[in-house]
Image (tube, rainbow, N blue to C red; front, side, top):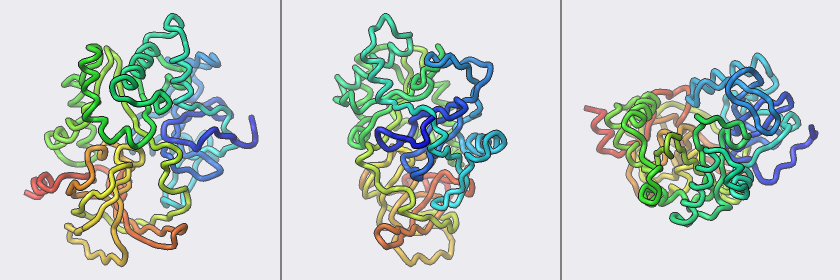
Length: 367
């Protein structure tokens, strides 16, 4: 185990690594301190279904769910078995799991794993790896996404997949997320095995998103239907995750410090949705109008929505008029010596009562 982590590129969302005790960790966000990686500890050594084809180690999953509650539970569990991983972020003012660089044993890059699959003979791939290969070819041929801008994450990344594993497919580069929804349905025509999610799975997705936002499943359905890439590949769930390139990262960890104020409702216009599909998502906004009854006095402009809840984003484009409910924060931009405000989504303070909606849908909530 090296004392210094030598990365081939900055850490990005849904990279994976193993720690010094061979636990499997999933990287969270593109935004990390220099000396550690923000993450969840997803698998620990134990008797269960997951076995690494690389090491032969058998694993049990200790992450119950990707929800906020699941991540809090993961933090509390890891606090008992590896307390040094609990890290209080001065940027966000909350505790995260963050593994010190010196405790990272092996780092897994989704783009490298996909390259390995593409270079392997079909006869030497399992059924899910073959589907990954087919999907990459379809996205390259019909959506014109370069192979170098794709990757595979999840259990396939660390070679621990089972026959029931999902395909968690990465696409790198904000430009490829902009019209992905419009283009993706062509794959339904090109490969009959790729189909939209079934009504049953769509309903479960809607119910989950409704719990996170506090709005009705019926209204949630309107927004979920805009993610036209929600699909299955045969009997395998298919998920598409977008990530900025390393060269596109908007700011470094520690450049900006966030101070929470209170929950608010704000009407505004989206001016830049380039980061609207990644994690965390960013919408730059303007012409902001407070709709809630709060007595907040803004002494600087409200410029941004920053969301750690992917179920609430990925729907909106430049010039859309929206209403957002979330946690108002003051941002001190140390690098540029200025301050502004943002709305933060995905917080404990607003859990189950936060959203981004079109104004006409917001008005329905008020009735």
